[in-house]
Length: 208
Ligand SMILES: C[S@@+](CC[C@H](N)C(=O)[O-])C[C@H]1O[C@@H](n2cnc3c(N)ncnc32)[C@H](O)[C@@H]1O
Image (tube, rainbow, N blue to C red; front, top):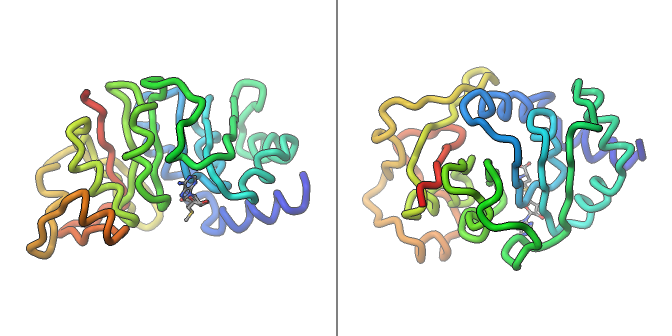
């Protein structure tokens, strides 16, 4: 493994195994084989769980990380994954641009701390597929306004352990302040909405 690959991974995995545990919890709830992760940076952890993951990022460091195929393979092996059976694809692009990916293809779309991924990339998610999204950059709020989605669960974290809750979903996504959440407001602020409950992330199912 190249030294820079090791360093980038160690920075990414500072809370050792945290992302791995997150994606394992999601995998227990969502049956998926093909995953799309726009704005991934070097977060390789989905490939420890799912057999086919396409990563998209504009950052050159992400491109260098994924181009070290040997290093990526070593990281997979270190997580008990056979690289022969796990496809890792990286696209060095702006996810807002037209990507050379099939529409309505992926089972799971991941949006974590990377802007309005759902706005641009839901087209690649198949109906019945699931969006995993957190609220920090406003993308959970954006998905909640999108008629293509219905809330299917929330991901909560307690002492570093993740689980998915599917009950009482109508008690989530309620703004703390009396504010009308609109697409325009989200674009203007580029920030998440403060809700009365703050799970780590949300699972939205694409219904149309
Ligand atoms: C804060 S990092 C989050 C990385 C990763 N999702 C995580 O949670 O660890 C945001 C990443 O999104 C990427 N990004 C932001 N906007 C993007 C866009 N329009 N197209 C592609 N990548 C983008 C950045 O280059 C950066 O690597």
